[in-house]
Image (cartoon, rainbow, N blue to C red; front, side, top):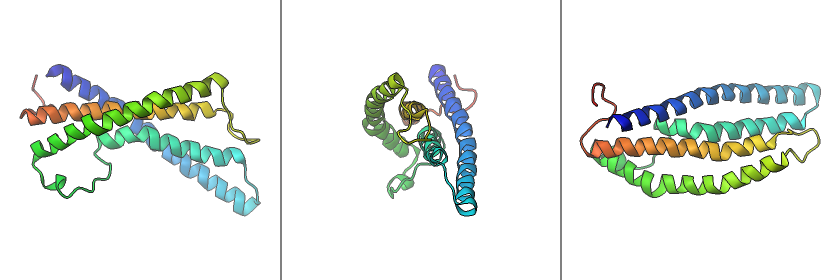
Length: 176
């Protein structure tokens, strides 16, 4: 049990740290959009680089923040049954959801996006637009990285759910 407890804590720390980085990236998006709006309306000019930076940062936030959102149980749930269940019932739904849906979907996206990102790195892909971002291969690497973080957090959720079903709480202090 100690191994699983430590594994879950490591995964939580990774996604917590990533969540902090993503939070600061959100500040960068706000500043970038603000600068773009000021340039457009006050100076009647705009730069492709700035526009592309907006969607690169947004993609980074969305992809890299998904694991943190799962950690904090922040994904939207529209489930009138789940909210009325006791912890063991919720654990069953979480475990089955992780095993049947979350992990297979993550592995499928990771498998296809690793090849996608790898090909982008091989060519050092950049924007096709003049003045665009020269490092498009970096944001394409966020696709498998983000889904790896979600898969890891899903693994932690699945482990916690399994132990909840067994009547044990991995997060209680003092248990071995």
